[in-house]
Amino acid sequence: MPAVEGASYSDGVKIWSVTASGYDRNYTIAYDTQKYATHWVAYPLKSAHMGSLSRPEDWTYDTTADAPATSTQVNLCNSSYSSYNNGAGHARGHLIPNASRNGVKALQLQTFYVTNAVPQIQNNFNDGVWSSLEGALQSIAKREEIYIVTGTAFAKVGESKTTSYTTAKDDTKQVPVPNYFYKVVLKVDKNSAGTVTAASTIGFWFEHKTYSDAYTNHTASVDQIEKWTGLDFFVNLPDSVENSAESNTSWNSFSSF
Image (cartoon, rainbow, N blue to C red; front, side):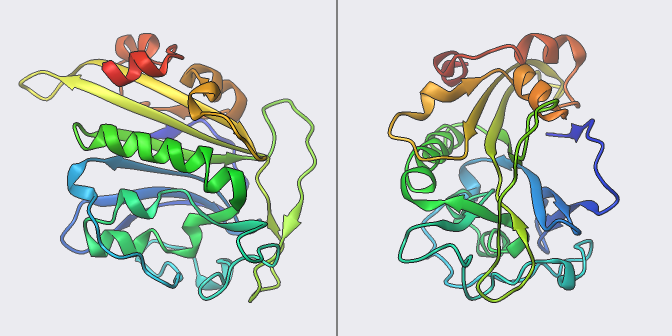
Protein backbone atom coordinates (compact mmCIF):
# COMPACT_ATOMS: atom_id res chain seq x y z
CA MET A 1 0.00 0.00 0.00
CA PRO A 2 -0.35 2.24 -1.89
CA ALA A 3 -0.73 0.42 -5.17
CA VAL A 4 -1.34 2.32 -8.39
CA GLU A 5 -3.05 0.68 -11.32
CA GLY A 6 -5.00 1.46 -14.44
CA ALA A 7 -2.67 3.45 -16.65
CA SER A 8 -2.03 2.53 -20.27
CA TYR A 9 1.58 3.62 -20.51
CA SER A 10 3.85 3.40 -23.51
CA ASP A 11 6.40 0.61 -23.79
CA GLY A 12 9.07 2.93 -22.40
CA VAL A 13 7.53 3.24 -18.94
CA LYS A 14 9.23 1.24 -16.22
CA ILE A 15 7.87 0.80 -12.70
CA TRP A 16 10.22 -0.39 -9.97
CA SER A 17 10.76 -0.22 -6.22
CA VAL A 18 13.77 1.55 -4.76
CA THR A 19 15.14 -0.24 -1.71
CA ALA A 20 18.17 0.16 0.53
CA SER A 21 20.02 -2.70 2.19
CA GLY A 22 18.48 -3.56 5.54
CA TYR A 23 15.31 -1.55 4.95
CA ASP A 24 11.89 -2.16 3.49
CA ARG A 25 10.82 -0.48 0.23
CA ASN A 26 11.73 3.19 0.21
CA TYR A 27 9.44 4.12 -2.67
CA THR A 28 7.98 2.87 -5.92
CA ILE A 29 8.40 4.92 -9.07
CA ALA A 30 6.97 5.05 -12.61
CA TYR A 31 9.41 6.56 -15.13
CA ASP A 32 9.25 6.88 -18.90
CA THR A 33 12.66 5.90 -20.27
CA GLN A 34 11.84 7.27 -23.74
CA LYS A 35 10.25 10.59 -22.76
CA TYR A 36 12.43 11.11 -19.65
CA ALA A 37 9.37 11.82 -17.53
CA THR A 38 8.57 10.60 -14.03
CA HIS A 39 4.83 9.93 -13.75
CA TRP A 40 4.55 9.24 -10.03
CA VAL A 41 6.33 8.18 -6.86
CA ALA A 42 4.48 6.23 -4.13
CA TYR A 43 5.76 5.91 -0.58
CA PRO A 44 4.86 5.45 3.09
CA LEU A 45 5.72 8.21 5.54
CA LYS A 46 6.13 7.93 9.31
CA SER A 47 8.14 9.54 12.10
CA ALA A 48 11.07 7.12 11.77
CA HIS A 49 11.69 8.37 8.22
CA MET A 50 12.25 11.96 9.31
CA GLY A 51 15.00 13.68 11.23
CA SER A 52 17.57 16.43 10.84
CA LEU A 53 20.31 14.98 8.63
CA SER A 54 22.06 17.58 6.50
CA ARG A 55 20.91 17.87 2.91
CA PRO A 56 23.15 16.18 0.28
CA GLU A 57 24.73 18.55 -2.21
CA ASP A 58 24.63 16.41 -5.34
CA TRP A 59 22.24 14.10 -7.13
CA THR A 60 23.15 10.68 -8.57
CA TYR A 61 21.85 8.18 -11.08
CA ASP A 62 19.66 5.38 -9.74
CA THR A 63 21.76 2.23 -10.08
CA THR A 64 19.68 -0.01 -7.80
CA ALA A 65 18.90 -3.50 -9.04
CA ASP A 66 15.67 -2.79 -10.94
CA ALA A 67 16.37 0.72 -12.16
CA PRO A 68 16.54 1.50 -15.90
CA ALA A 69 19.87 2.00 -17.64
CA THR A 70 21.61 5.23 -16.68
CA SER A 71 21.66 6.17 -20.38
CA THR A 72 17.88 6.62 -20.14
CA GLN A 73 18.14 8.86 -17.06
CA VAL A 74 18.74 12.61 -17.25
CA ASN A 75 22.11 13.92 -16.08
CA LEU A 76 21.04 16.21 -13.24
CA CYS A 77 23.85 15.01 -11.01
CA ASN A 78 25.79 18.25 -10.63
CA SER A 79 23.56 20.89 -12.21
CA SER A 80 19.87 21.64 -12.58
CA TYR A 81 17.82 22.35 -15.69
CA SER A 82 18.99 24.88 -18.27
CA SER A 83 15.91 26.98 -17.46
CA TYR A 84 17.03 27.40 -13.82
CA ASN A 85 19.09 30.43 -12.83
CA ASN A 86 19.70 31.98 -9.41
CA GLY A 87 16.59 30.47 -7.88
CA ALA A 88 14.30 31.24 -10.81
CA GLY A 89 12.97 28.90 -13.49
CA HIS A 90 12.65 25.13 -13.23
CA ALA A 91 14.43 23.53 -10.28
CA ARG A 92 15.04 19.82 -9.67
CA GLY A 93 11.72 19.22 -7.97
CA HIS A 94 11.65 16.20 -5.66
CA LEU A 95 8.59 13.96 -5.91
CA ILE A 96 9.48 12.27 -2.63
CA PRO A 97 11.08 15.14 -0.69
CA ASN A 98 14.35 15.13 1.18
CA ALA A 99 12.62 16.13 4.42
CA SER A 100 10.46 13.00 4.22
CA ARG A 101 13.55 10.79 4.43
CA ASN A 102 16.17 12.85 6.32
CA GLY A 103 16.07 10.55 9.33
CA VAL A 104 17.82 7.64 7.60
CA LYS A 105 20.87 8.42 5.45
CA ALA A 106 20.51 5.46 3.09
CA LEU A 107 16.89 6.37 2.34
CA GLN A 108 17.62 10.08 2.12
CA LEU A 109 20.30 9.62 -0.52
CA GLN A 110 17.81 7.75 -2.69
CA THR A 111 15.56 10.82 -2.83
CA PHE A 112 18.45 12.43 -4.72
CA TYR A 113 18.31 9.95 -7.59
CA VAL A 114 17.78 11.89 -10.80
CA THR A 115 14.67 9.85 -11.60
CA ASN A 116 13.02 11.46 -8.55
CA ALA A 117 13.48 14.93 -10.07
CA VAL A 118 11.15 16.74 -12.44
CA PRO A 119 11.23 20.32 -13.79
CA GLN A 120 9.29 22.37 -11.25
CA ILE A 121 8.82 26.13 -10.98
CA GLN A 122 10.94 27.15 -8.01
CA ASN A 123 9.69 30.57 -6.95
CA ASN A 124 6.14 30.64 -5.59
CA PHE A 125 5.51 26.99 -6.30
CA ASN A 126 8.23 24.57 -5.14
CA ASP A 127 9.34 26.96 -2.40
CA GLY A 128 5.78 28.03 -1.57
CA VAL A 129 2.45 26.24 -1.73
CA TRP A 130 4.07 22.88 -2.63
CA SER A 131 6.60 23.06 0.20
CA SER A 132 3.87 24.03 2.67
CA LEU A 133 1.80 21.01 1.64
CA GLU A 134 4.79 18.71 2.09
CA GLY A 135 5.39 20.16 5.54
CA ALA A 136 1.76 19.66 6.56
CA LEU A 137 1.88 16.00 5.53
CA GLN A 138 5.16 15.48 7.36
CA SER A 139 3.58 16.93 10.52
CA ILE A 140 0.74 14.42 10.33
CA ALA A 141 3.19 11.57 9.68
CA LYS A 142 5.05 12.36 12.89
CA ARG A 143 1.92 11.16 14.70
CA GLU A 144 0.85 8.29 12.45
CA GLU A 145 1.91 6.53 9.27
CA ILE A 146 0.39 7.79 6.04
CA TYR A 147 0.70 6.74 2.40
CA ILE A 148 1.37 9.22 -0.39
CA VAL A 149 1.45 9.19 -4.17
CA THR A 150 3.01 12.30 -5.72
CA GLY A 151 2.62 12.64 -9.45
CA THR A 152 2.79 14.71 -12.59
CA ALA A 153 0.40 15.03 -15.49
CA PHE A 154 0.73 16.57 -18.91
CA ALA A 155 -3.01 16.63 -19.66
CA LYS A 156 -6.20 15.51 -17.98
CA VAL A 157 -7.90 12.49 -19.54
CA GLY A 158 -9.62 13.72 -22.70
CA GLU A 159 -7.92 17.11 -22.59
CA SER A 160 -5.74 18.59 -25.33
CA LYS A 161 -2.77 20.34 -23.78
CA THR A 162 0.55 21.60 -25.16
CA THR A 163 3.69 20.33 -23.43
CA SER A 164 6.83 22.46 -23.20
CA TYR A 165 10.33 21.05 -22.84
CA THR A 166 13.60 21.89 -21.17
CA THR A 167 17.02 20.26 -20.92
CA ALA A 168 19.45 19.67 -18.11
CA LYS A 169 22.50 21.92 -18.14
CA ASP A 170 24.70 18.82 -18.49
CA ASP A 171 22.50 16.83 -20.90
CA THR A 172 20.86 17.20 -24.30
CA LYS A 173 17.76 15.09 -23.61
CA GLN A 174 14.48 16.95 -24.10
CA VAL A 175 12.62 16.75 -20.79
CA PRO A 176 8.87 17.51 -20.71
CA VAL A 177 7.67 20.07 -18.17
CA PRO A 178 4.57 18.84 -16.29
CA ASN A 179 1.39 20.85 -16.77
CA TYR A 180 -0.01 19.55 -13.47
CA PHE A 181 1.20 18.24 -10.12
CA TYR A 182 -0.85 16.25 -7.64
CA LYS A 183 -0.71 14.36 -4.36
CA VAL A 184 -3.10 11.73 -3.05
CA VAL A 185 -2.80 10.73 0.60
CA LEU A 186 -4.19 7.85 2.66
CA LYS A 187 -4.70 7.15 6.38
CA VAL A 188 -5.99 3.81 7.64
CA ASP A 189 -7.38 2.25 10.81
CA LYS A 190 -6.58 -1.41 11.43
CA ASN A 191 -7.91 -3.98 13.86
CA SER A 192 -5.74 -6.23 16.07
CA ALA A 193 -5.33 -8.68 13.17
CA GLY A 194 -3.94 -5.96 10.92
CA THR A 195 -7.01 -5.75 8.70
CA VAL A 196 -7.97 -2.30 7.44
CA THR A 197 -11.33 -1.38 8.92
CA ALA A 198 -11.62 2.29 7.93
CA ALA A 199 -9.71 4.86 5.91
CA SER A 200 -9.62 8.48 4.87
CA THR A 201 -8.02 10.07 1.82
CA ILE A 202 -7.42 13.54 0.45
CA GLY A 203 -6.08 14.77 -2.86
CA PHE A 204 -4.43 17.97 -4.05
CA TRP A 205 -4.31 19.13 -7.66
CA PHE A 206 -2.25 22.05 -8.98
CA GLU A 207 -1.84 23.57 -12.39
CA HIS A 208 1.90 24.09 -12.76
CA LYS A 209 2.15 27.85 -12.21
CA THR A 210 2.94 30.30 -9.41
CA TYR A 211 0.65 30.60 -6.38
CA SER A 212 0.19 33.02 -3.51
CA ASP A 213 -2.56 31.17 -1.61
CA ALA A 214 -2.76 28.13 0.68
CA TYR A 215 -2.59 24.46 -0.32
CA THR A 216 -5.96 23.93 1.37
CA ASN A 217 -7.54 25.84 -1.51
CA HIS A 218 -6.49 23.08 -3.91
CA THR A 219 -8.02 19.94 -2.44
CA ALA A 220 -9.75 17.39 -4.65
CA SER A 221 -11.16 13.96 -3.99
CA VAL A 222 -9.04 10.97 -4.91
CA ASP A 223 -12.00 9.89 -7.06
CA GLN A 224 -11.67 13.11 -9.07
CA ILE A 225 -7.90 12.80 -9.49
CA GLU A 226 -8.38 9.23 -10.69
CA LYS A 227 -10.71 10.54 -13.41
CA TRP A 228 -8.22 13.21 -14.43
CA THR A 229 -5.21 10.84 -14.53
CA GLY A 230 -6.75 7.51 -15.54
CA LEU A 231 -5.05 5.91 -12.52
CA ASP A 232 -6.54 3.84 -9.72
CA PHE A 233 -4.94 4.63 -6.36
CA PHE A 234 -4.88 2.57 -3.16
CA VAL A 235 -6.19 -0.54 -4.87
CA ASN A 236 -5.14 -2.71 -1.91
CA LEU A 237 -7.93 -1.22 0.19
CA PRO A 238 -11.06 -3.34 0.66
CA ASP A 239 -13.67 -2.10 -1.85
CA SER A 240 -16.13 -1.17 0.88
CA VAL A 241 -13.52 1.04 2.53
CA GLU A 242 -12.06 2.47 -0.69
CA ASN A 243 -15.41 3.56 -2.11
CA SER A 244 -16.32 5.70 0.87
CA ALA A 245 -12.83 6.99 1.65
CA GLU A 246 -11.96 8.34 -1.79
CA SER A 247 -14.82 10.85 -2.04
CA ASN A 248 -13.50 13.16 0.68
CA THR A 249 -12.45 16.73 -0.25
CA SER A 250 -12.06 18.17 3.27
CA TRP A 251 -8.55 18.72 4.62
CA ASN A 252 -9.96 19.13 8.13
CA SER A 253 -11.83 15.84 7.90
CA PHE A 254 -8.69 14.05 6.72
CA SER A 255 -6.45 15.68 9.35
CA SER A 256 -8.75 14.73 12.22
CA PHE A 257 -9.47 11.16 11.05
